[in-house]
Image (cartoon, rainbow, N blue to C red; front, side, top):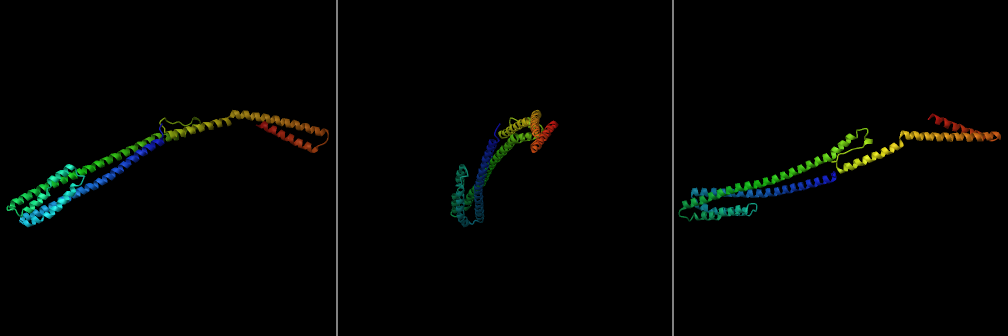
Length: 301
């Protein structure tokens, strides 16, 4: 037998700890989601900035407006600053940040765009510039896909852990309810069925070995009380003992009434012989009549 109080306390503490774990994981997931959204937003902004710069440079090269190509270097500086802020984010693995530093050479791209105006072979310079922009664009797109997929996988991993924790909580709660049903509710239902037996006050209540301690103590107390009541009832209301006591009382009553009659009759005769005490004679006659009534009543029992 195990204490229901102790079992409930252990189950409550287990559920409380798991709920605390779920709250912590939920808060952690919220933090990671916010930080991952910042990384994804920065990556998308960098891609958009570079796409805008690439479109402007391509348009200028097609129109052979070399001076416009040179003025785009200021936008490349802003792009380089955005890439530097993205590289500082610790959520991005170190190998990706190192590879990003090698592949995204925005400074070289800015130098190439400035030198195209001084380059005698501007067509060749334009091809070099376009080739560099194509490589950077491909790398930014690949980096964005990889980072987004990794962020999503980490979020899914946290969600899996949370689902597992919730599953554990449900299992513990279900186990606690089953244990409570087995050790408390079933014994109570059995006691309810036993109470319908008309002879329950003589045979007492019974319970299984797996019943919780609190119910067994209560049932034992009830059985002990029933035994005391039965013992007291049997001592006070046994028909044989009552008949025996009643006969003894009747005999004593008859003896006393006969004695009263005899003594009263002697006193009455004495008063008559001396011819005195009329009042006393009347009183003695009343005593004799009362004693005779008592004797007559005893005969009717």
